[in-house]
Length: 301
Image (cartoon, rainbow, N blue to C red; front, side):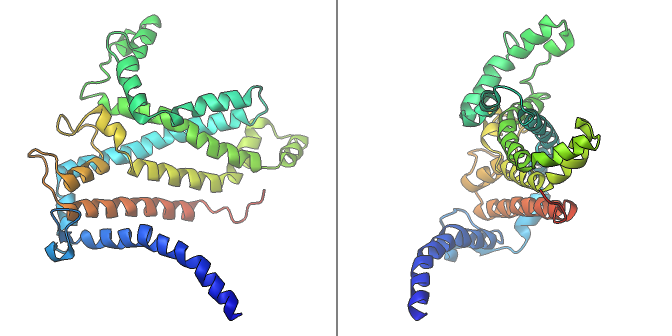
């Protein structure tokens, strides 16, 4: 028995050490940093100046950070509705027995394997272009002149343009998660429901959706994580030094951590750490609410 314990410790020690160094230590250090004023992220503890919760008070009183959090909330809510709706629709269609299912699945998922830089460039140069963009040509062809003349890349419309482009790239990823959940549902359940007289919409409402509660929680959690990490798209559509319509908390945290090189912000790694803590709490809160509202313990596949 002692030999077995020794073997267990020997095999677990590298994994535990790796977990502590890579995950636990950065979490604890970031949490501690959020209560200090720190100029550089690599500064030793001796250079830290304790400020208590002043970093959090500063963030809540800063209009730029509030704008960033508002943009994050819009991306999470409006984008979530768009992405979840279309991804679920495609997931249901692709599991309904249509032909060339693998081909359509690959086409819908394709944007996820393309670089965000390439996707953003495509949208800015070839979709939103006011002269020869796809939207301009399409709406002009349909004689929708009001839509054709929308300046998608100006300050008033840039955030909506950013949201549409980002949602386009995320639908395929969440579609696969829906598909994996739908394919786990036994066909015998649908066969029994058909014999009992339930049509397709009724089967979807009373069978498919309830049995996908666990998958929905997974999708919402993953969507929340991706929204919190929203950075590249915001920077590509507009840098904060030019305008703030597309700023998100991750961009603001980057500016606080490394400095913007202008009068908008100064370097403060402690303030950046506080932003990281707030974003983490945002994800935890969403996950907790989903677990409370969507209980699937009484459901069986």
